[in-house]
Image (cartoon, rainbow, N blue to C red; front, side, top):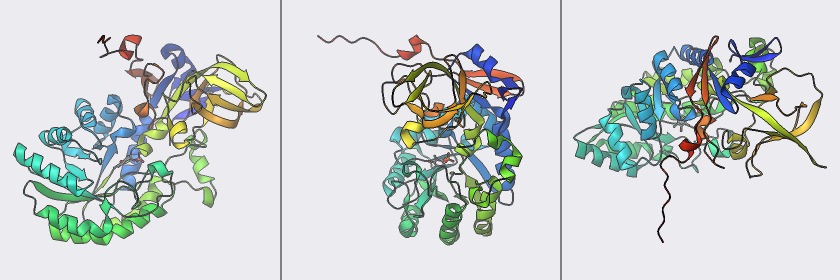
Length: 432
Ligand SMILES: *Cc1c(COP(=O)(O)O)cnc(C)c1O
């Protein structure tokens, strides 16, 4: 499932020694494996091949131009959530004709930009948005292709911040109101009903919620297809990845030795659970995976700065921080931590923390890890999705470099920001 492995005691990304790479780029730095991304794409694409389908990569997971370009070359479309992402997709060589535009808060300016770019579809989240799109399309002399996001009210059994398919979430319209909203939408002059969409949440590790959503929506989708001539059903993203044993999951045998209770979802399991519900619809089925394609394909490299011992704790202070990777602070997200040089040191209970002035700035709490010393380097595994993409300059820390690896080659896909980048666009205003 990915290409991060120890070779002769050193952690490699494909054919690149990460210790050597870290010496060149400095730390912290993000590193992505291109082959992992391509293989994930091909594996999912092939599992879904019984369906007339298209994979629209959810660009928000990792929107580096090189990653978008790589996926565009593989034949991916894109699921975007802002006009900034549409701009990126176009710069990366992706086609707007293969873009769906999601999000509950599209502004007039974003809608205009997407219309002018001739995107494939707006995934509409409310009646108010539908009216706004109709009016803007009218003023641009365009007909806006739309799909309405329907919330199936199923429990995705994931963290509450990334669950989106319950009726209490802000997303989509309720399944019971869908037919009425489609009928109203059909009377709008500047809108064409092209599809229907759903997305129940992220980091879903069992097939049941997907199967439930597909089964629950299929009769409605069929009815709306027949009534309004819909051409596609977008089934969203949400396929979960391995965080806890990320390194071990590189080996195919690791997958085979899992117990039935610990069987994490594979693309083939996912496909098998939903295809029986989706194939009979005889429609184009869109998928919007983000995390699955890029999550296990990236790591964050960091260097130990200090070991700080208090009566209560053993703190390993590293040079990466919550501004670089916010998942632990935001979602209690777990990232496996491994030393770049394989270590036989005694496992010690420790906290791994960053330098930022917040108690939420940690990568691990009370975790047994081999004892580390200042200067040792580590990899935070499974950091390819919602890692760099959610980073900020908090504490005036420049944004990190991103390196793309393929085979034995490694290239900077983004340079480390300079201090000048930190203050770009700012000026000193004196008003007194
Ligand atoms: C975030 C999002 C996705 C991608 O979710 P993953 O869990 O990364 O696959 C897909 N569709 C929509 C509408 C989203 O908001």
